[in-house]
Amino acid sequence: MWEYTDKVKDHFLHPRNVGEVEDADAVAEVGSIACGDALKLSFKLDENKRIKEVKFKTFGCASAIATSSALTEMIKGMTLEEAEKVTNQDIANYLGGLPQEKMHCSVMGREALEKAIAIYKGTVPKETEGKIVCECFGVTDLEIERAIRENNLATLEDVTNFTKAGGGCGNCHGAIQEIIDRVRGELSTKPPERPKLSNIQKIKRIEETIEREIRPSLKLDGGDIELIDVVGNRVLVATRGACASCQASNQTLKHFVEAKLRELVWPELVVEEVSQ
Image (tube, rainbow, N blue to C red):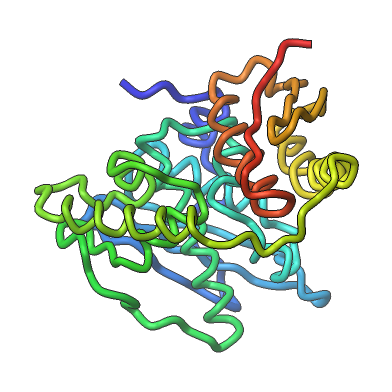
């Protein structure tokens, strides 16, 4: 039995924006009913090129419906440039977290949004890019590689949770492990692109990143964090608001906060929660 947050349950039992937008500016379909999850997303822009109306039709589990509903609420009123920045982790955070085994539902939402925007812009992606690795769920090597890089995945179980690859017959486990080893090897051996930072510079960038990139996403769900101290590469934070009592706060700190700080400040940062 999965442990869902109250917000996931609410969006599953009372999904918002169900249906299909009439005379939509873009309609995108991702997933496959045969594979257990499918999502159709449509939107219409207003005169200022902001998303005025957005609706979805989803076939799948409670998490698939809840993430689709959440996505439509999140992007309503956004420009396409703002919507393009929404990540699967943002969707999970909006819902107060998802069970790790259901993170692939947030990935499906992000994929549908990306495809719809691409269709609107006339840059329709190819139906299948990359080489199919998981025949059971039609997942390619490029999709697996992207999930590893964006979500800092390290194990076969992680990859299955975020992409469903490897969750069927298991014949692809060896190929998935090879991709994990290759990408993790590239990440660990890749020379730092950023110049070395003094501790003062590092703290300043961490504060700026929290304020600009992290806090707005957490506040969408009533949460927040406070920077307590920086010791070497250890970033000590305290959760505030809804994050303080959220069962998924550890996932948020690792897969969202830490990932953002590693991406935008320093690749070796480790986020630790302290009680203050």
